[in-house]
Amino acid sequence: MQNGCDVLIGIDSGTSVIKAVAFDLAGGQIASASVRNSYKTGLDGSATQSLGQTWRDCVSALRGLSEKVDRLAERTAALSVTAQGDGTWLVGKGNEAVGEAWLWLDARAAPTVRRLAAGPQNRARFEATGTGLNTCQQGAQIAHMDRHHTGLLDQAEVALHCKDWLYLNLTGVRATDPSEASFTFGDFRSRSYSDAAIEALGLGHRRSLLPEIVDGTEVTHGLSARAAAETGLLAGTPVSLGYVDMVMTALGAGIRTSRTNAACSTIGSTGVHMRAKAAGEVELNAEGTGYVIALPIPGIVTQVQTNMAATLNIDWILQLAGDLMADAGREIPHSELVARIEGWLKASKPGALLYHPYISEAGERGPFVNADARAGFIGLSMRHRFADLLRAVVEGLGMATRDCYAAMGALPQELRLTGGAARSGALRSVISAAIGAPVRISSREEAGAAGAAMMAAVAIGAYPDMDSCIDAWVTPLLGAAEAPDRALSYHYTTLFPAYAGARHALSPVWDQLAEIPGPAEDGPVLTTHEDAALSAQGEAQ
Image (cartoon, rainbow, N blue to C red; front, side, top):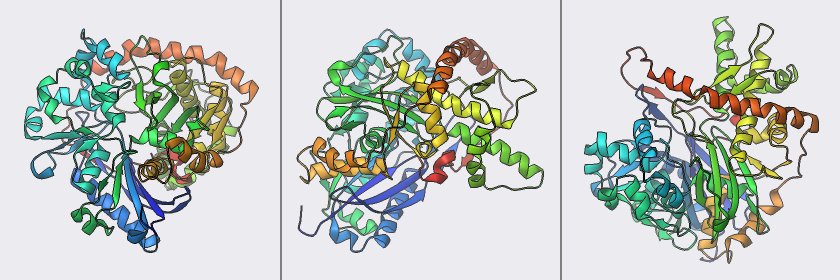
């Protein structure tokens, strides 16, 4: 680390927004800049994103940051990159993109997931990776491509994830990190590729697509001359390859403090529910669902269950309200609808309805995997009004959080909460009551970018290890614990068996609905991914 270099940059390329955030070496946030993402969806379940545009947007975010931080290039000690997880970003000759990236939202691999999940080798794959097979994952997507889009794989030289693609553009190095490598094709205990996992996916003949595994707390590569010219940073600046965004966010939000493991939920566009523990303490469930994802701390992993959609459900119901008002001749901004949430919740009674928050067209992946799962209300009558529907949607997020933690063992005794929804007192109250535990939030504004920057800080020797960095960057920012409302918690505890029983009973109905052909429509639809409903209060996934 050179004298005068007092800035660390964390890049966080989410599904909605690419952010570049500057921190000082003690973890204080200096400035941030962001660029909106866009992706395309199709009626075939596809969700794709341009690799070239993603890099250009990253460059724009870094350029924007340099406009806010004086002498950013000369002051930058290192930068690190994290990004949205899963998905498949294929790269061929000359490090050029092969087609567009398949995102984690892409549902085309559903039939391949069903075939592989029913196969005799799937349990061995799960025992190695600790991760249930679903349509989001690169392993399932490449297995699907291997049967139905062989031309794409034949052109490709390496299969990357989003952060890996940005790292390639920053450094010229093809690599992935231990977190995504192990939960997709590897073993979470050794943090290396697993023959059993690769063979279970039927991809032994495609093994050459798998890149080198690099731990960004130990190894950095210099910013390339080409990337320096594009970004305005200095060639040779150390670049750290971060872990996948969900664990970077959890790290920055307090999933581990004072060398103690904890639980952490990110309630953003998706819901990510995580418990940190020693790798040897992981108990894999009989259903074969969830993830086990390494943390950048030796021997420590996160056990994870993830909801495909969290505040996307709130986006949906607010949009319904907005559309109806617009049809009546009154346009109401989305931010104003968000501001009304608290009032609507006060005007409704807890537990009046059940809502399963499976609004994503890709179904659900936690704590069960069903690409055909869909959202729905149970218990509607003529007396119910919009406020009751909205409350049911919010309570559905609380029930989904409880459902996920119940699949990982005993409910947590305390929960660290992050994501846009964490800024809503009403939603925090619902989640706290749903799991029956106090919640604690961090004042950290950009937890994902901070987690990545923490890896860079350790890599360049600013801290001797990650726990020392956590002591400085994370622990001081945690707020006081907010205890659950006892009466509300008791009510949700009695309601939860009905919630869980209904989602089990609905599974054959979802299967039947999926077999009914829809209207014949052609062509992809260009969609700009909206922020989570509460992102107006400061966060996008």
